[in-house]
Image (cartoon, rainbow, N blue to C red):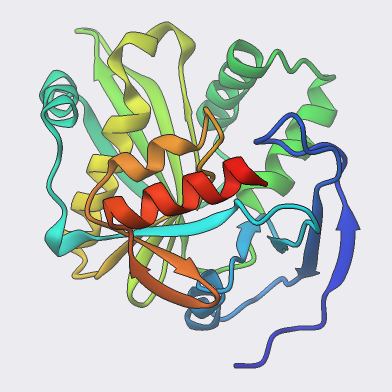
Length: 251
């Protein structure tokens, strides 16, 4: 497998662990990248943001662990089943990735509500486009979740995904803050696993599992899962999960 030439960059403090101050990544940019090669690179810790492909290479930390679900074996928990049932009335549509006004406006509400981000309109649109719309893969798509309010259907969430030869990779998910009680993030994972099955894909890639991160630890709640360690996928058993958590606590 040939990996494009990369450069190493520092993006300041870690987004997942507040006590890690230097977030170092290997990066390369690509306008048209082979989805099959990208799926192989997922095993080596790469992720995509727009045309930007990266993997973390922090000297003092290795907690960004790729995680995936083997969808044929997935079993939702009782809590996940309740959330799925609560949202069954939502209508879902999938479309090729594009710059849709309704999706951008929802993203703005999400960014402000969840992260307090407020930018000038032009800067915000440019940032959104380069982050989620200007994909380096031709197989990127967007899933839209609608709530029927009687006279119209209101857009309440969007999932940004890459459809790969053997799986679907989750890129990002944004939801309307007024719908917080619906647990739409959980629901989107369940629906995207369903989409994998309908497209006859084997895996659903959840990105990074970060064992000691409050915001990223949840990914291990979808079982059975596999994690990539030293370039090889292996089952995330309870024993392995405990071993990894204890290893990172010690470091």
